[in-house]
Amino acid sequence: MDGQNRDNESSQGQFQLGAPVRLMTIGLDPKSANDLAEFAASTPLVRLQAGLIDYLSEDRDLPEQWTRNSQFDICVLDFDADRNRARITAEKIHADLPDIALFAVSKDSQPDLIIQAMRYGCSEYLLKPLSNDQLLQSIARVAARKRESQTIGRLIVLLGAKGGAGVTMIATHLGAIFAKRYKRRTLLIDMHPSMGDAELYLGLIKYQYSFRDLAENADRLDREFLQSFVLHHRSGLDLLPAPAFSQSVPRVSLENIGATLDFLRYCYEVLLVDCPPGMSEETQQAIRRADQVCLVAVPEVATLRNVARCLDHLVRINYPREKVGVVINRWTKRHSITDQQIEEAIRAPILWKLPNQYLEVIRIINDGDPSSNSGDSELSRSFDGLARCLASGPEAKKDAPKASRGLLGLFGADAAVSRRQ
Ligand SMILES: Nc1ncnc2c1ncn2[C@@H]1O[C@H](COP(=O)(O)OP(=O)(O)OP(=O)(O)O)[C@@H](O)[C@H]1O
Ligand SMILES: [Mg+2]
Image (cartoon, rainbow, N blue to C red):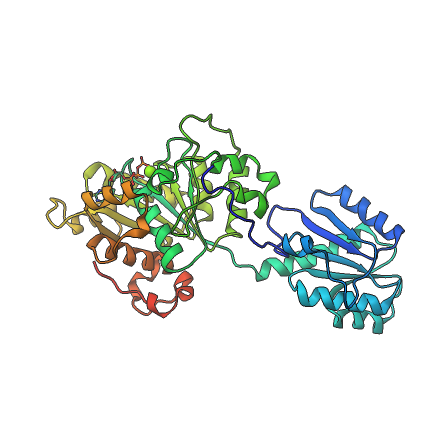
């Protein structure tokens, strides 16, 4: 595998979608420990990961591997054996691992003790004996709060009106721009069932696992698991490639494809989906979730007819028209079809035009690094403009240059939309 083993990123306290909530316990009495273990065994949503019998003290820290490997979401802390040491433990965890939710456990329901525990950093107070209902409700409350505070990545689907229109070339360039220039955690997903090219265009040709392999394992998704599937490009862009040509194509249900995309949106700020041409059910799973659909075409009659068909289809599946942008790739001034004729044919405005620069495109593909583009060529300036435009949404085109919606706000002032068409 090439680049599919980068160190695990911190995921403590993330409550990843589709992944079990991970618990650790400290000082829990035997009966409560048993109740909790039975509860964890009764549901795949919860995983009891580790337990400390004794409290922490001023000079005793959490085991290093607990803190280093970021493996917990909730710490269940018994306050009954020694309230003062429980307080020290709570305060230490709250300070050192602020993303972990602390649950106090006690047989004592006095309001002032509950308030004290909250002051020490506990977000829930569970009364003994622990019941499954009580645990479920507390976990659900914390998980809901966490999810609300997590950002969901912007998902951009790139779809060719015809094979070879330039989807992969555009997706890899945009991915490199979002990752390198805008420092956004960016993932490119190659949804081709086989014979995708994204890994080739990024020079990441040695790999074992594809997006479909990940989706086949949708029930095991968590950030650590994801890391063994992702390829890392030098621009900072991550890639989930299509199955290698020699591999058998895993059969994956549409539910798994959808669940995997949902999960990935919690892991990245920008997700670009390189779809095969056509409106397969799998592509529609991505479109349903998309913040934007970018329809890629070249200025020739057959492709433009397909653009009109795709637009009609998107209307039929109730995808909002204002979120669709048509990109004309390989555009030249000398073309026999004018912009006006194109817009009449597709009954929609052109969002962006990328110039026809065959030699430069081939050079970039051979280098395997779209981020190495010098920045002063016509093609690279045009890509910059498209990236800004997609970051703010195609609907922002009419009110450029002051648009600041979507990702654009995150990109900072230098990302103000300025068109160079
Ligand atoms: N702007 C451009 N100028 C010149 N050549 C281009 C441009 N964009 C793409 N090409 C060429 O078009 C070819 C197809 O591009 P690409 O592989 O990105 O298409 P695609 O839509 O992903 O194809 P597929 O449907 O097979 O996935 C590439 O060989 C590339 O060199
Ligand atoms: Mg392609």
